[in-house]
Length: 267
Ligand SMILES: Nc1nc2c(ncn2[C@@H]2O[C@H](COP(=O)(O)OP(=O)(O)OP(=O)(O)O)[C@@H](O)[C@H]2O)c(=O)[nH]1
Image (cartoon, rainbow, N blue to C red; front, side):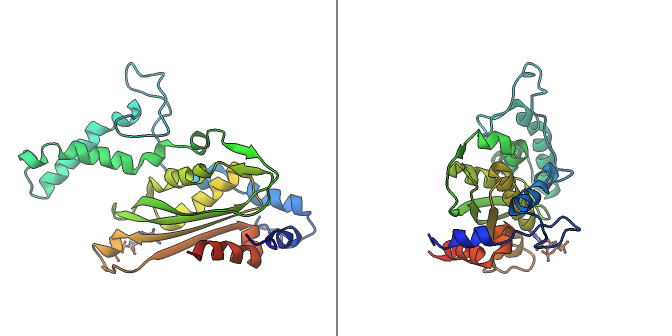
């Protein structure tokens, strides 16, 4: 890792984006660091209108059950299971709309299978940052860049309900707190396992890391292949969409940003 990165980080004034305050104003660096992180509310992660099932079960007999964050279909909370009959019914109607016979042997269990698959694809709606972090935030006197790259990502395009997939690279500059490495990948799961657009996914991941460890800066790059552009519509099979969110020092210091991008792009 480039040892020169941190002196430049510390000396570089962090800009803030608070609507009225200008870049490089007379605020101290610490005040600036606090400012850009405090801008994010829960709404930045949980966008308005995001459907949410209750945190505890509404199924008779399961009122005290809470769901597991490692949600798998054969180990899933009653709240999610309760959605299956309605969803399966919708899929059955869809099969009929296609002119298919939902009662033929091969399709008999398809509505239930499809409903379970859709629940899995959207399991992120039932996860929160707090759930997945599980307290794995550690005090550590470390202020060098941490990068976890090429995290596989599978998501669903909210416009066409078809998948998009790719990889996510996350970097942050810790400020005396580090995050369990797997938790970066788990944060990707929370937000990718929903109906999404790639831009929002990228931003939500960056904000979540910011909330988790209040670092000096966070950088996220997402590279995605959208099946809505491959299998239908414009049918461009080789195009990739790259989105990024740079916060704090990654936004303001070109050297830090460049170090991150070099680490991400070096194979
Ligand atoms: N910005 C952005 N656009 C997306 C994403 N996923 C899908 N889209 C786009 O959403 C748009 C929807 O456009 P519409 O014209 O309403 O739908 P459409 O007729 O199916 O569009 P085509 O895909 O061009 O056939 C398309 O341009 C998609 O490529 C995403 O993650 N980010």
